[in-house]
Amino acid sequence: MKKLLISALSILVICLGLLYSRDFIDSSNSEGKQTLTIFNWGEYIDPELIKKFEAETGISVVYETFDSNEALLTKVQSGSTPYDIIIPSDYMINKMRKLNLIKKLDHSKIEGLDNIDPQFLDKVFDPGNEYSIPYFWGTLGILYNKTKVPEDLKFEKWDDLWDSRLQNNILAIDGAREMLGLALQSEGRSVNEKNEVNLNLAEKKLELLHPNIKAINSDEKKMLMINNEAWVSVVFSGDASAIMEENKDMVYAIPKEGTNLWFDNMVIPNTVKNEDAAYKFINFMLRPENAAQNSEYIGYATPNAKAKELLPEETINDKQFYPDLDSLGKAEVYEALEPKLHQIYNDLFLKFKINTRK
Image (cartoon, rainbow, N blue to C red):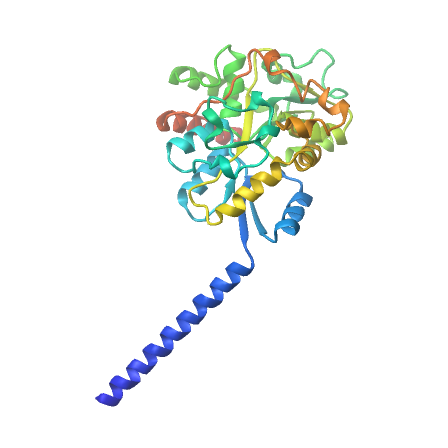
């Protein structure tokens, strides 16, 4: 019995020793090679900047992408991946703040916030920028091929999308707020409509768009439009800019009834595992040369005033992509919706998508 007890104790000691050794090795590895896990929109950073950040800091970047704010929220809420940096849009930042999913920033650790144009700070979705740092901004509009669409269509109004001559030639954007929002604005209503009857009417109007829709997608639309596989696309301004660089027949229009004015900001989620690296990345992206490089590569407007000074004059003078905010009188920022209303928007958009496939 005594021998059995000694043997059992010996095995226990060995197991504990192995466990300690494994933990020590893991700890050593993690100390030797830090990682930063970023969750961002697809095609939303110059890959060379990630390489530059890794070279400067010795921190290895793990980069994952999402295609909608709602997908971002679902993934962060699941807690399946401990992200260090995420880049949601205005209304989602407000929502995540209320859900206690993101951390309040320590501004003493942030360098370069004074590079940001004051008009992009202290917005209603994050007063005082307590939770977020500006990354990109822009509008939602209509991109069209001027050599393909009828000459009388200038897309000065959202209703032009319903023109029967555009059959099977429109790429819709894969977003509930965007598609329901443009249908609402076409009827003189707000993109933040809360009346369920009006929301159902907007969905019914979208169903009338079915004959003109070639596909509902997000990132894929760039290549499709560049290759003239569709005449018209509902797009964000930065995507429009990138497409126009490759296809000179494209024109970007903002309908006069209004548009969505959006802001994407960097935030640190509560799942953060490497907070020090997260602040290093924020500071890295606030440096004018890096923000300018990112803007030139992606095509979106930078909120970084010092970076803007480094961009070509033809870029910053293009009012399609750097409009005066005061000139966008009817532009609206999406508000964070209450959960029930948020679900209604998603359900109606899903209904629209399902019926489109029929």
